[in-house]
Every structure is written in structure tokens, then in C-alpha cells.
Picture (cartoon, rainbow, N blue to C red):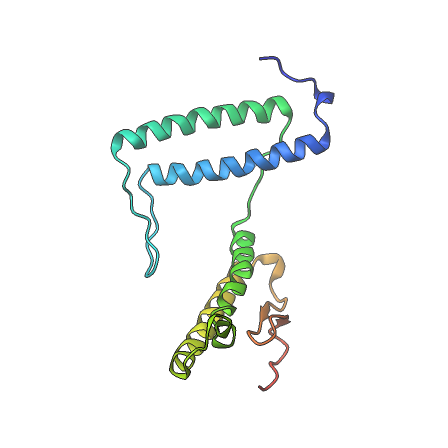
Amino acid sequence: MRRPKANAVSDNHRRIISTTLGLLDERLCRFERWARGGTAKGPLYEERDDLDEDQKQAILAQIAAACATLAEMREELGLKQQEASVTKLIGSQCDWFWEFLVQLESKQLNRYGEVSPHLAAYLDPKVKLLIEHVDEISSIARRTPEHQGMPQASRTADTGKARTCDEKEKPR
């Protein structure tokens, strides 16, 4: 295969190629972790390793080949390796998931049918607690040396709007 001339790849093309291949590389890393037996386990979610050894070895071989192709393309197309900050990944995923948690509040669940008072009394404090845990995880992850001493942003379940810890929540 011929290597494309440097000026044959526009910046726009390089960006979309780099983004798409970076996402593939991220998935390949996840596949490799699974093929090596790394799984997650939580109270409501568990990854079950049901790959046999032959499958694991075949997947790892394909991942190695794909990674070699990605490295070649990076070199030949002048692509930059994408770097993902774990602090930013945790923070952005907490921010993204916060909205899903808010949808579990009884006033939101009423869109799917009337929520019994007993379920509301049980669910609302639990959801509030989970939101607090997710906000705290985000806050902890964002504590980096350059952010020390700066107020951490958090949200209130009532408004969904960001507020700093220096601001007091308004009484309900």
C-alpha cells in the first residue's frame, strides 16, 4: 500500500479519522481487558467471563493485529495519540449519569404511572443519596493540584443547575 502524501489528508479528514480510530482503540483496550479475564462486578451489574481460552487467544491476536494497523495509520497519516484524563472521564461520566438518577425521583417516575406514596418515601431519599455519592465521586476526581482551593461544583436535585459548595442550598 502506498503512503498518502502529507497534503492529501486535510485537517478535517485527519480529525474524523483520528476520532473514529481513537474510539476503536478505546474499545480494543476494553476487549483486551475482557480477553485477559478482567471483569467488573457490582451489586446490580456483573460482567461474566464466558470466553474460553481459545476465544481469548484468538481475540488477543486480532487485537494485536488491529493495534499494529492503527499504529501504522497513526504514523503514515500523522495522527496524534489521544490522551484521556481519568479525572475528566470520571467527572464527565458522573455529570452525564446524574440526569439518569434524577429521572428515578418519584415526581419524575409519575410520567410512567402513579407512584405509590410508600415507593416515593423509600425511593426519593435513596436516589438523593446516590446523587450525593456520584457528585462526591466527581468532586474527588476533579481535585487536582491546579484546582486546589477552588470551590467544587455540584448540583441540586431540585433544579439540576450547577452550584458551588460555597453557595447554600435554598430551603425547600
